[in-house]
Image 1 (spheres, rainbow, N blue to C red):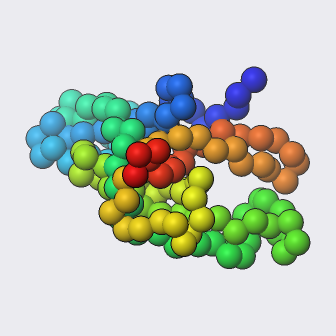
Image 2 (image 1 turned 30 degrees about the vertical axis):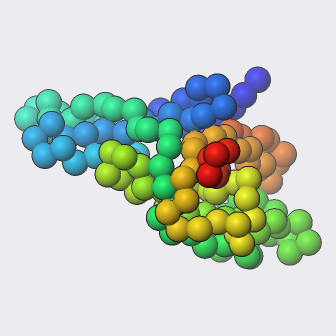
Length: 144
């Protein structure tokens, strides 16, 4: 059984992930994670202005960096230097005009370039107690 890192953030569609976002009808502004209309209780004009949308599964690498050491507490993963594995995180610009912060998988940092076409995918994260969780990520497009 697949356990998603959280519900309501994305869905898995084959080998891609589809991110759930929102758009303001009045301005066209797209937000990820999505604004939740129920948080604007007592403001029906705002609730009615927010529409749920799904984001594109392809975008371009806007910028990236590597995480070479365990994040500070309250990070719950294994903090041991011999167990921790460095990873790449970046911002992906999607056609909807939003930057999404995500893990970048399937490529060494030296093989990445700003403006490179990326596609959404999944990756597994392991918690300190050994639970495996599926989250969204991006990887280089096969034809890039």
